[in-house]
Length: 168
Image 1 (cartoon, rainbow, N blue to C red):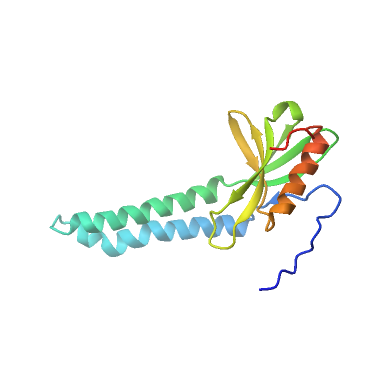
Image 2 (image 1 turned 60 degrees about the vertical axis):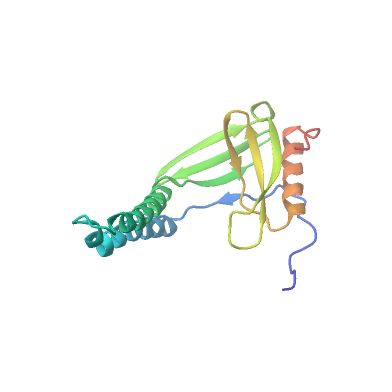
């Protein structure tokens, strides 16, 4: 597969958006509801009345319910993010349903700006820029397909915040 991505990242600040459109949100909740309802509907007869195979069917139903609840929770609580760069700060606009709020981060708020390999997807590994905040949860960018793009984005963010000595 040819690599048709440019070799250099543009000179301006990286555009970082992690959208959570309503269609994806509703799709996650529908898939979760399906994963909860179908095993119970189809295998519930194998659980009640109790019999020798009830634990086997209960394990399958429990797995479906666990996955389904996780999908529904992500649909309900997954937030969209857009990163902006006013002078000396990174402002992360966060959206959850109709609620919008901002988190403003300066160099004093961050312990590090790092690049982390994310191997959690089925496709090729990606790299994310992570804004570390000590004990508070970190903010992560979308996945970059090339490590050098993530490193360049992290370096630009560090320079923008005046953290040039922090190579994370």
